[in-house]
Image (cartoon, rainbow, N blue to C red; front, side, top):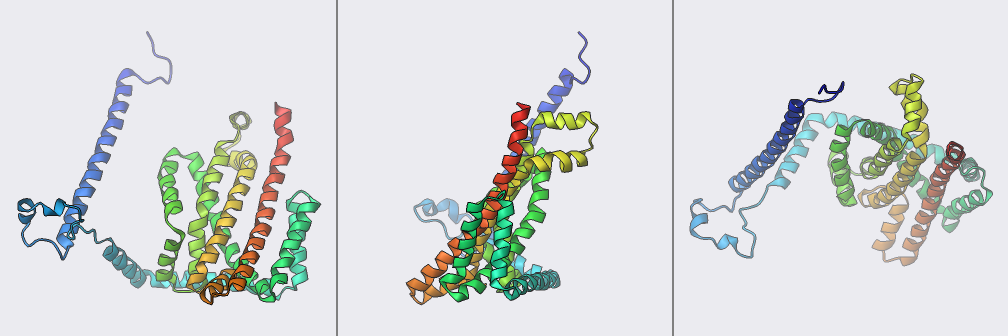
Length: 358
């Protein structure tokens, strides 16, 4: 019997199965080799190892309840040496990044601080009005929340602007890096398999840990907070961009193919517009996580509303900490309503088209 065009022969199928099996074997052998190398390295570099390795086989007390002191991976030493070498060799690059981000931060912060506060509130109200699809209730609510940030305490207005400036730069970095990465994941299974474990790791590591490499590379201040905010907040945007593009109806993609659309035309004209509600949901999640990280970053000298909470706790001033906490909640509500409302508006605009299709 003749095989259909494009079908794999029996030998080709067996070859592919054998190749997959060999890949798994090589992967497992590689993991075992790495594990053995780590054991040998930890033993050889340990200062508490026995003088003679034969003692380990004569006395098995090290298999008792306590962990043996010589079985210690020198990860801390490797990380410190690596960061030191990185700073010595590429310190000028990190200094240039630091100066550039500080320059952008000062531009944004000075613009918002020097603008009259009624004008800033009016700008937020207008943005909310159009982002929410001209919903008056949401617009009025966001306007009152913005007003009450300064109404709680005059200093909170400037602190909220400093926090917002850091967040805006961090979110901008998330958008220019996260959306292209999400697109790449949606278009390539291999890229997705590589990036997903990295995203899982980024979302598992405690938020405080992101501050450490930032401090070692950029010192104290706002720049390590921006870098930590970017790393902490970008995973949801990458995931939801990937999800949004993969959820685009296959019939729509087939229709675009039938009209001879190129990959670029399909992406810009079909996939991204239809995935925009999911992408906006990712930006919303990214914004909330960025705000949380900026508050935590007050521990490394970053000015903002988080700084007021930290000072209140240090001075055991419950009222001051509570006021600053309420101001943070109000800022979170403002940012959440703007981004969430815009995402809901996009979904409402796409809903009639889906109903007509059905």
